[in-house]
Length: 286
Image 1 (cartoon, one colour):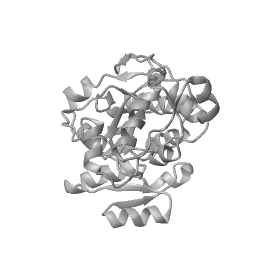
Image 2 (cartoon, rainbow, N blue to C red):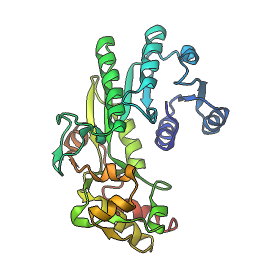
Image 3 (cartoon, rainbow, N blue to C red):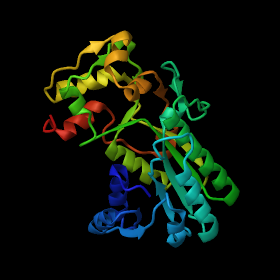
């Protein structure tokens, strides 16, 4: 459920393993895209509960990549799904993508899966609500739920090159928050590896484990693709020139402890550093 970039990557991995893959599709366009890949589409809309009557999820493995609505602090889409499950049967396991944003600002501190959530913006509250609904339902119904808390995702067609080309300012490096990211292909492999974990619910922080900051990220991209580095400004200037949405990210700083992911899921990352990922992409996007 959720047929965006990561959903498609995960579907391809399962198809390569010979699995039968179904996908939730709201539009005809999505149905055709799924069929072209060899995925069996199920026409339904998570915002229209009556359309969920044909899911028949019994004993399936469910990957959840569906974003919550764009406003509010709750995720009604997850509520609609779980209500449908109560009348139609239950999947055997659920693996859901969440965000490291639920930890909020940790002042650059190291965050483990045991760190209490501290969401500070609505988008993080929505993800935490999704997690909470799903985990409670899983406990009540005996369905293992695996939550993957993911930082920034990068990969082909997922780079902020237009922003760099447009010269949008960044914070000076000494002011920039600590950030965490993972290549889209590696995230897809983590999603598949989570399906092989012994039965039981679990939370995993997912990133490549590299310690960097937001401005370093933009500078590295600019250098790799031969673009001018964006101007670096202080907070006073940033408040005038950077969007409120981006500023909300810049006000949160944390580093992710990925020990649990490494030890329990055993995924060998193809791109353990940003430079590894960029070198594999080449320089054509610049």
